[in-house]
Structure formats: structure tokens, C-alpha cells
Image (tube, rainbow, N blue to C red):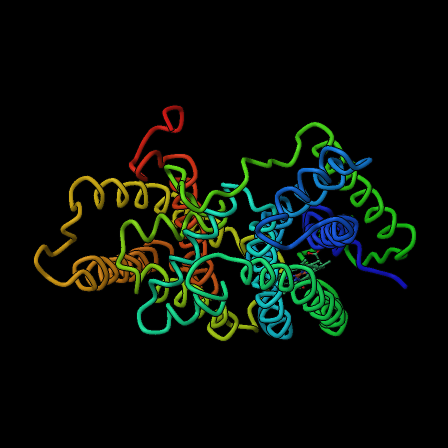
Length: 412
Ligand code: HEM
């Protein structure tokens, strides 16, 4: 089997899909080993993890490998998604694989979320409490979803069993099935989207083995080595056993939900937990239908103009989002954008409408100055929201202290 030289140029994909696969393999392997001693009950879960970590031969290392693989897989998947989007590998015949990939991303986040609770320490217990409370704030259906997820009105023995079953059976099986399909669709689409060939790559094909196989082997070995080093040097954290009577201050969601928690500080729950996340998901699903599939794709940021417009979008988000956070918190305050009106209007509809007008204005101004193609404009909007979410996450993780007040990171 032979592959085009430009398809395996490292800087085209950065091997991110392969890296994700290796991390997933490490997760399954270390997870199966830990299953022999883990006890999914509120009374014994923490103790079973502590004694596995301290008293079992290589227990600390195995737990570290699981912890680090999980914490690397999430950003690697986001980077892979970015790579696919920013090289235009998501429309035309790759559309169904893009949608499948979104499903894979959902299961990866579900796996991270359900696994977070299993050690049953203070951080885990309260982080999951805060997340399920966010879910419960969704009007009408929220409380029912919350109680189905945690098996009652608060985190208890049923939650432990639910989360354990989701973590060790449902998500891994779903992932194996979806990943098999993912690889099949990459093949049927004729491999990855191709960048413009450099002079030395024009018309050149290379044998799968050794050219691609050796590269994959080197990257895989590098990933395994990096995870082992991290697991050796930094133990997976295990705090005090969960105490449902004492909540830490601040109580923060896991870092990958910190952006959502930050959103909840500024927006009414209906918008923060339902409307805005649904808009993002709908946008990701709709993107391949909005884009022009006949346009050339394959190069990073599509074209030079695409790169410029994306840069403007990223810089706009870096400036606008912190300004919004400070303005909303210090100037607008608790009363919302229209004091006296119901919160769903003053903290929901109004700032949401301002955001919508802002994005439309951005599109018009960028359209006038840079005359982007439709695909370049879609890319810019995607970059804007991605960077905005990144800034919200950083604000939630580093700039929130006691009482979730704004603080400098070195004071939190
Ligand atoms: C553990 C999860 C995943 C694994 C192991 C994986 C693996 C891969 C691999 C090995 C490739 C070939 C090229 C590359 O390395 O980039 C690929 C391509 C692709 N992936 Fe994934 N992927 C995962 C998740 C996702 C997600 C979350 C999305 C998007 C929402 C996605 C969408 C795609 C698409 C559309 C392609 C084809 C792109 C092209 O032709 O350029 N994948 N994936």
C-alpha cells in the first residue's frame, strides 16, 4: 500500500489522531488493571483507591498513567478537532466523519466526567455536585435529568453505581464502536484531506511500511514515554475523603467544564447551561452544510486570507471576552443588564442579544475589509468562539477565588 507524501507530512496532522488512539489504549489498559481493586460504593471507594495507590505494586504508577492519559486525551482531542476544522477536513465527503467525531468527543467528555467522581475525595465529590447542580438549573427538564444522572436528589450510592457503569462499560464500548467506524470512514473518504504539495512532494507516493508505520511507531513510543514520565514524577491527586457536610470554597467544576461554570456567573441558567451550549453544538453540526464543499481544502487556515481573518477573530475574542467578564461583574453586577426585569431577560436575553449583534457586526466588518469566502468566514466565527471559550475556561480555572470572586491567579 502506498500513501501520498504530502498526506504524511507531520505538520499536516501533527499525528493527533494517532496520539489520541494511543492515549485511549493506555486508558483502557490501566483502567482494566484498576478495576480489580476499585470498589464503587461511597463508603469504600476512597479507601480502595488509596490502598491501590499506596500498597499495591506499581499501583501508583498505573493510577498515574490513567490520570495523565485522561488529562492529555481531552486537549489532544480538542486539538485534533481544531486540526480537522482548520484544514477544512470536515465538509463534502468527510461530513459524516465530522458528525461521528462530534459523537466521539461527547463520549470522551462523558468518560472524563464520570471518572472524575470515582476516587470519591473532596474535590471530586464537590466538583460533580456543582456540575450536576448546573444541570439541575436548566428550566423544566433540568431537575429530571439531574435526578436520572445521579440517581436521586443528591450524590449517593446510586450515583456511584451509575457513574461506574457509564465509565467502565458504556463509554468504552461506545468509543470502540465509534472509533472503528471513524477509521472506516477515513478510508472510504480516500484518507485525510490533502494539503497543496510542495515541490519535493509533487506526485510522490511512499510505501505505507516503513514510511508511515515507522512515524506512527515513533510518535506512539513518544506518547507512552511522556505519560510514563508524568506518572512517575507527578502522582495522580487524591484529596481527603469526600465530606458531603463541608464544601470547599471555592467549589470548582473539573477544568473542562470551568468555561461553562464561568458562563453561569454572567448569564441566566437557561442561557448558560442550555441555549448557548446548544447553539455551539448546533453550529458544529451545521458547519459542513454551511460550507462550500467544492472549495479547495487541505491547507492550514485554507488560504493566506483565511489565516488573516482567523487571526483577527482570535485577537477580537482575546480582547472582548475579558472585557465582558470584568464589565459584567464589576459594572453590571447582580442586577443584570436591565435591573428590575426578570433575570431571564436582564441576565439572559439582553446579553445574549448583544453577543448576537456583536458577532453579526464582526462578520460585516470583516466581510467589508477582507472579503473572505464563505468558508473563511465560517472558520473565523469558529475561531472566535473557540478562543472565547478558552478565555472563559482560563478565567474559571485561574482567576476565580473564594466565593468565585475575581482574583489574580497568585492570590487564589
Ligand atoms: C479518540 C478519539 C479520536 C481518534 C483516535 C481519532 C483518530 C483519527 C485519525 C488517526 C485520523 C487520521 C488523521 C489524523 O491523525 O488527524 C482522523 C481523522 C479525522 N478525524 Fe478523528 N479521531 C478521534 C476523534 C475525533 C473527533 C472528536 C473529531 C471531530 C469532531 C474527529 C474528526 C475527524 C475527521 C473529520 C477526520 C478526517 C479529516 C481529514 O480527512 O483530514 N475525530 N481521526
